[in-house]
Length: 144
Length: 427
Image (cartoon, each protein chain N blue to C red):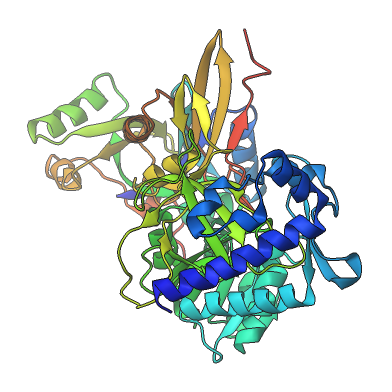
C-alpha cells in the first residue's frame, strides 16, 4: 500500500490553484492528481513524492487533509490491461471504491491507483503475478 | 436556609426594593402609577405578579443613567451590554454592589469546586463587558490566584495556561473549544496540563458541547449564568453535580412565565426567565424580562443547596428564528452536530428567501479526522447531518459541508446566524 494525500475542498474559485501552488512552493513533485467533485464540494487525490510533508504543509495552510492507504499496481500498457486487474479482484470478491492511473517517469508501464475496502486485495494481486509498488519506489520515505 | 426563611427574607427585601425604586427612579414611579400599582399593597411574593415588567427597551430609553436608583456620586463603576441586539445599555454599581457581586462570583466559583488553592485564568473580556471584571473580583474574593488575561490572542492564552500552572479556566464555551484546538496545533495536549475545572458562560451551549469540551480538555465544565442588566455573571451557577444552575435566590427573585400570557408556569415547565434584583443599589431591576427560555428543575439537588435550580438556557426569545412558521433555536443545531461523528460543532446558519419561501442553509465543517477521500462517504455524512437536523427542527434544510476552520471561531460570543431574508426577498 502507498499513501495518497486526500484533500477536502469547497467548490470555490481558486482553491485548487492555492493547493497546487502551496505544494509547488514547497518543492513537492506530484505524480498524479485526480479531482472527484459534486455540486458543492470536491475531493482532491494526490500521489506525490513526499506525502507526509505534503499533508503537513497543506494542514498548515488550513486545508482539510488526510492520508489514505491505496494500492498502486503496475499494469502493462496495452488494451485490456486494467480490465484484467479489475477482473482478478472481482473474482476474489474485492470491491474497488475508486481507481485512476498515472504513468511512471520511466515511461514503460502505467500505474493504477486503487482504493479498496479490503487490504488483502494487495495479496490477491501479488498472487496473480502483478507488480504492486512499494512506497519507496513511488516517493521518498520520511525519515523515521 | 430553609424555604420559609428564604421567602421571608425575599419578601422583606422586595418591599424595600419597590419603595426604593418608586422614590428614586422617575421611570418606575411613572410605570407603577400608570399600572395603578401601590407599592404598599404588596403583602406576599405572589403579589409580584401585579408589578409591571421592565424590558430591554426601558434601559435603552433611559440611556445612559436614567434608571439608576443611587446618585452618581455613589456609583463607583459602570458596565454596559454588548449591544448585539441594538443600542448599548449602561448599568451602574455602588461600592456595596461591587462587594456583593464579588461575593456572589466567589460563591459561583466555590460551587463549581474552585478553592483558594486554584490558579484561575480569566479569559472573559475585561472592560465594559461584565464578564472579565466580574469573574476577576470573584476569583480574588475567593482567594484564588487570579490571572487577568482578558480575551484574545489564543496562542498566548495556551502558553499562559501551560506556563502558569492554571487549574481553572473562565471563558465562553466556544472559546474553550478554540483554546483546545489551538493548543493541539501548538503541540500541547490540554489534558496533560493541571487544568481541572472550566467555568463557562455568557452564551447558550449544549450538554453535548459540554461533554466535548470535558473530553478535549480533561476537565469538569461548569455552566454559569448572568446578564449585565441583572448584575453580570454570578446570578446562577451549577454545582459540581452539573444538574441545573442554582439561582442565588437570596439576591435575585426568579420567575418563569408563559411566553404568551406572561403568567407564572408551574415548576418544571418552560417559559421566559424574569428576574428581580433584591439587593442591588446602583441599578436595581424589577421583573426584568431576560428573553432567555428555561425552566425550574423540580426536586432537590444532591449537593444539599436549597436554592432552586434553573435548567441551562435552551434559547432566547430573541434568537428564536421563525422559519416557515416553525420556531427554531440555533442551539438545537449545535446539539445535533455534537452528536455526529465526522463534523465539528461549528456551524453557520444562512437564511435566504427563494421566492416567498425561507431557505435554510446550514454550513457544517468536516472534521479533520474524518477519512474524506470518498465522495460517497461525504455525501452520506451530508445526508446524516441533514436528516438529524431536520428531525430536530422540523424544518427542511440544505446542508453544505465546508472545510475545517472555514467558519469564523469566536473569541467572544459566537455568530451563528446570518439572516439575509429581507435582502433576498422575491429573488
